[in-house]
Image (tube, rainbow, N blue to C red; front, side, top):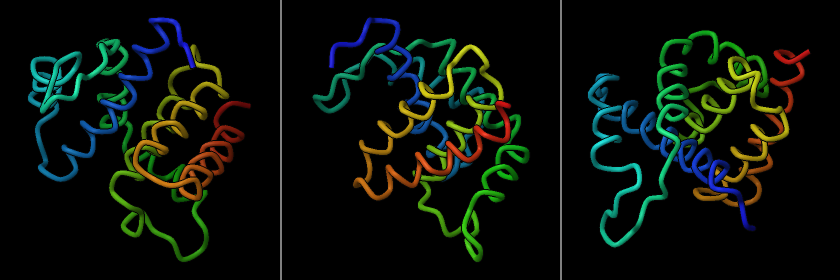
Length: 150
């Protein structure tokens, strides 16, 4: 699929945001240090022969900072859509960050259409998981969207 440059840059920002938040979750990296590390060493760089796509830096920063700032609100919206007996702790750590980023965009980025936000994070899920998990992302984000984008 041939995306326009801005769209590719936003897709790259979303994937990087999930990776950054995963790193923060695992290492408890301070936000400023985390953003700086991604700006200096990841976004648009080559790491171990993998070329990272140029990301829209302001969008990346907004998603990462927004997920951190609104974490409790985002997690409450997520927990409300999980099946009975499921908790955040039961979710795969990467899956958790994908869902948090998607929910943040649905809550805070009215400039991003619902379908775009959902599709983009389903695509991110495909980078890490099989179809079953990607469908889970679709279902959860669709359910949250009905609540936050009425």
